[in-house]
Length: 107
Image (cartoon, rainbow, N blue to C red; front, top):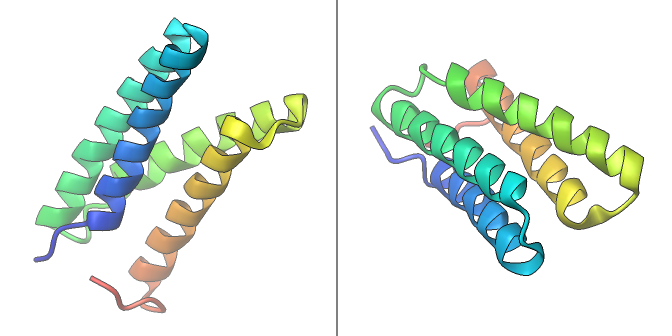
């Protein structure tokens, strides 16, 4: 069993984005959402580290976050931060699906 370093990095990026949104714009919703989603993704990375077939929490959270931020990007047209988080989330969903289908054989 290896650590899901990419999952942990993704979780930390989401949490840091919420903190940065609060620091720059004073956005409490950004802080709350970033810490909430970052924490859930961190726990999901822990679960995946313990059992690689236990990926449903990370997959679901990444899909929801990608959908929400994709919608926000579509409405605002601003790549930062919504477009970036959408791209990262879609990349995580793709990574998980490829890994579980056997196409991607990284640990």
